[in-house]
Amino acid sequence: MIIKSVILSGGSGTRLWPASRENHPKQLLPLTSERSLLQETAVRLDGFAGGEVDRRPLVVTNEEYRFIIAEQLRQIGVRSPQIVLEPFGRNTAPALTLAALAALEEGDPVLLVMPADHVITDLGAFQQAIDQGSSLAGDGMLVAFGIVPDRAETGYGYIRAGMAIGGGRELAEFVEKPDLDTARRYLESGEYFWNSGIFMMKAPVWLRAIERFRPDIAEACRSAYEGHKQDADFIRLEQGAFERCPSDSIDYAVMEHLASAPELGKGAVVPMSAGWSDVGAWDALWAISGKDEAGNAGRGEVLFEDCRNTLVHANDRLVAAVGCEDMIVVETPDAVMVAHKDRTQDVKKVVARLKAEGRSLTQSHRKVYRPWGWYDSIDEGERFQVKRIVVNPGAKLSLQMHHHRAEHWIVVKGTAEVTNGERTFLLAENESTYIPLGHTHRLANPGKVPLEIIEVQSGSYLGEDDIVRFEDTYGRSSS
Image (cartoon, rainbow, N blue to C red; front, side, top):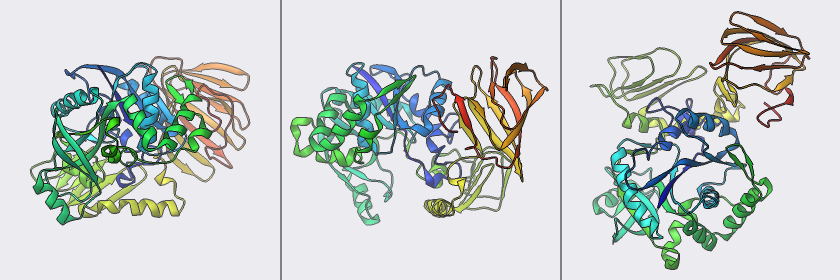
């Protein structure tokens, strides 16, 4: 029996703004270690002794994240991952259906379905629970992992468990987020577990269930997958078919209805105590972070002076906190957020206001990732902009032209291969070139170390949409 990780990497994580943005959400951030949450999820079965593990995870995500996900997986040694690209977000049930269809093309593994943005601190306990769940899933059951609650929590959905079955318990029902009194009763009963959003089952079992309970989702996903195209590591769906797919979650679409159709396979719950958190807001990150003797948690260059129970998340600069208690401070190069620890759920209100005002701060960071590397807009003013650009070894930008701006390129590290009009030539460190307005040009890195340049743009319009592409390795038609 082979276990294959299915990583669901949708969602924008608005309550973790300003670190999390629409185009660079929380699963792509290193919030708890030097690796991103996505990377931590991808290595969660490393060293698993309970059976054979397929080392090629199957990631379901959207178009916007495709290149950075591929790069983050490459950084941790994952070769040739399967990355299914959804043209539109349709929740977890369609995502799992697509993953099951893709997995069946290479065999019949047991699917371990995990959100990309959760934290597990006790890998030993996690893998023990997976070992128990894999036996149940191998026998044709649909398995949910329930977190053993340690408090009366009103922010999570619950799963009620029944009689013991194999290494778990029968799945009795899913329950919506309760009020506080109800949550206390759940905690005292010992019958209820937090819904982790982690599941296990064989692909055909899931497909039979989704066809029974949500044939509209099953039909749309099959049509979209049958029309897919393979593009390197990416599986591109037929857009028109997937657009017709309804949106629904794994819980609502299938798991809640299993008791009415036992012929499809029983539902089971495997209790798990593994330091799980969905990191739904900044106070949740504080709760799972390492702290000093005063309860303060810091990431980046942080100084605490007479502070208690405070989280400071510094990305770009030194942040000094003085006399803070129960506070959250998050610093990024283009925004700073300060909140009381009891009000972190309201960060989404700030994001809503910024969106209503048309501010780009909700969409992208100042540092923007591209398939060839990244750029950071370090300064700008009337008719000029300065960028720091890093191009990965062997990568190149598109052959392009701008109608409204000229550019100066100065190489500060590595070797650049420059196409400027009719000429192609090399630039070494401390050398530069000028790209006149309207000239066809391209930047490439022929070396084995990252290429770093400073680009100074000048002109009447400096937007990223002023690009006419003639050739592009990455299949893009716009920036």
